[in-house]
Length: 434
Ligand code: ZN
Image (cartoon, rainbow, N blue to C red; front, side, top):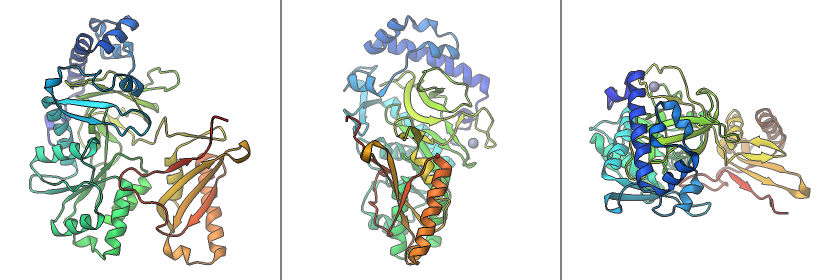
């Protein structure tokens, strides 16, 4: 099923032509309307008319989150304030939030890309979608909402929280598609279990999840618990919101809506563009946005683009599932560690719950990494000898994955904090200023 087959399956040559036209237009537009970009381009000695091929995008300067912070609140807008109809911000957990502005047409594009994705998940105008993403300055809630309404589906804008009520509604309203973050989904499944809900009797047909890093093991766990397929949604507020890339029925990589967002992969140290299939930092350029088009925005998300065609027929370029962020990479004993690697190791072992926390400390000037993970109730009632054995097994498995030894602590079921939004996986207690 396609929402917009013509655009989703556009022949590659036609797509490239369209991308180039749009790129030339957007560079001209920001050069003329955004003083920040005019200065950046002038400093780099690039004029809009120097963009003659798609490869010429590499001549353009990169945009970072710090640039957006420096432009706070409206410095990156390319249109007059009266044309902006909606504002969102990033979470602002690390410094000033960044502001994202949308014109009417931007909201239309956002709805279009999410409608493409939700159609893949099986949502039609006959269906009901329960949206547990937060509505507010966070883009998650509204992006999904707009896409579902564009399709003509019924939206239940319940937002995050009221978890028992969520389960009640899931049953009583006959929800067909459920949207959540993976960690909140796990939490909801626990509530459903406590309430004795028979998952096979629900009208649920699929799950869409995003805004958090996850592993395939985590996906399988969620699919098992809810008994339906779960699809990945990728997005970021700076560029637009959820829907920038979405998984198709193959569940193998995400299609980037590359008629609206031009992707590149760079080496985050040298800032050089890498060949498409090499792993590096994803950089995105808004090709069609009016309110706040960004050129070559550094997402800090680590992935690779795929060269191969997808059996689903879409020609939208594919990227690998995000496996880490350049900024949530932990350096422990000089080794780069991503939380997703630890999750992958944990999910290989039976008897563990997919709830864990990584704690990094530095007693005596040496890094130590502790992984706290919940044991299943049956495992926890086993003898101490068993627990010691399993602890060692987990430590071996993690060492296999990341290359260094960690301490594993098995904790009782349901003792680690549950999250209703993004899960806090890493607690770094090291002090770097001494
Ligand atoms: Zn596909």
